Image (tube, rainbow, N blue to C red; front, top):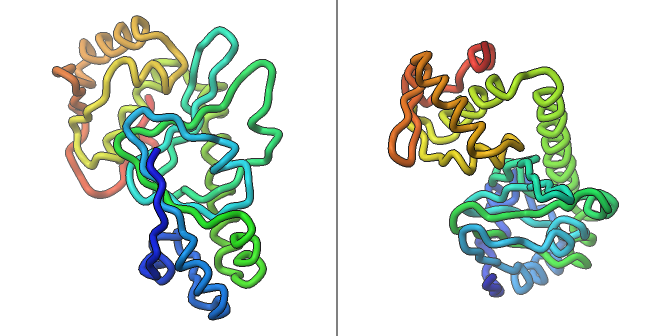
Length: 238
């Protein structure tokens, strides 16, 4: 990880940087402090992020580039991706108790070159006191995270692995806005808490059913067209 101080007010005045948390209503003295204390962190692909440092404290943070996958790993080493963090749903704080367990660990792993910036804890608390829109943004990010976790619980409870795989492929199509997605069997297995062998077998079955076409380092979905609009969730399983 590389750390640097931004020493700029460009991030202070950019609503997009803070997910809509408008900092313009802060006191002038607080703004002046922020300009010299916003920390930019750069991570390489597959690099781990310290959960306690970024998600378990009180600091205001936001993702600028790349993705962070929140991964649960059990004592046997099996994993499942709990949440994909993007710029749109970054900024939440996790209760400390969520990060400590004897039967599982929670890890944050960068996907692609990743950049995030944060405001130190003490100054963040001062901003929360002064800025209602920042508190609203923090709440929105937290509720978005909870909603995604509930959706995952629903999928694990009521969908077969084949249906979850198909849904995951559609989600990737929405993310990349194309019908051909650059995803490996290993990554799909990790996200679905399965093995590469089982996922490869299900993908082969979907190919035989003419739902997908397996290519080198990518998978093409044959029953949708590349589009910028969101797919109808009702079409994702079946």
